[in-house]
Amino acid sequence: MSHWIYELSGFPEVGDHQRIAGEAEPGKVVVFERADGQVIVDGFVRESIDDLMMVARFRWVASGDFSTVMPELLRAAALSP
Image (cartoon, rainbow, N blue to C red; front, side):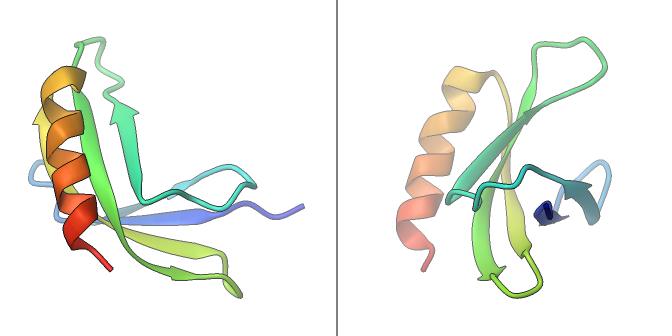
């Protein structure tokens, strides 16, 4: 069984990095909760996907409370191919 690799770019505080994800094909948006115990999430929109290599590339859109990040993600996802 293989896992997807998410390449996350544009994240202002961390920069570009990778994350190992699950086995299911990734959706158009992903949200990750910060590990520092704050109630802040980081939202990313998928820019491209490589089914053969199982790599999905995402760009950062917004950080903050989930209720404010999700509308930004949905708007950005509607503009992405």
